Image (cartoon, rainbow, N blue to C red; front, side, top):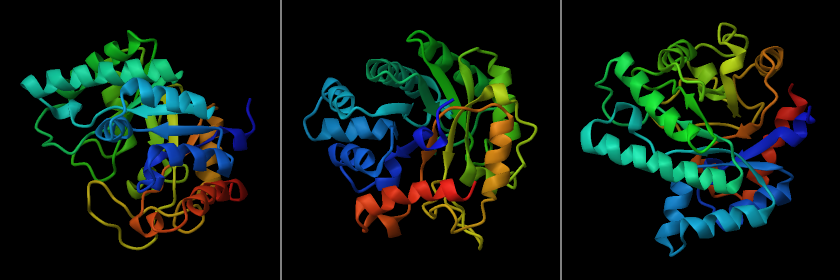
Length: 271
């Protein structure tokens, strides 16, 4: 098993105001062996004249592992032509992930209206999993503690089981676990075999924002997350994958990127 320090990855949302080329440099300089990227990182690169192939080359040349690549949001509750477009977007992300040597995609609940029932959502998840499987990839579903439907580990686990596809699993986030009331050892009921990715940041101990995309995340040790309990349970469940520091917060984006990135390593003294 890799030493836990070598399992830390830097999520690109943590340095939202940093362009991708510089983000990769900062991650390497800070000592991360891996990064977690998003669909928007590719899209923004296209907006400045790069191609997907250019982005893949840039990432591969950095020498960093890509632990997870996020797919475009909105698929799980989309319908009709938009749903079909988003399946095509999953295929695009799958191709890019495979080209970068990344084996796991991440899908989130999205920001669109949650007007499907759970079996319909599970069908969408299964089809996305089939697309990922065609490229030899896994698809991990993340729950969002602020989402009206997929807002706790039990619902996310139920959806994965309903999807019943071997390439569909879970991404857990220490922040969302804490905010959903399942922090510390509160995710004991989650099947360890389904945990395929993990993100971390601290959660404010005070009243939290109701925004669906909360930007109030903190460096480890500055909030309410019970680090020894959460990481201890994760180890008990046999998780040996990457741990991505995802801490979007506008208060951090104006600070030197290297300082912000290095704060992720504070978790090592807390677990």
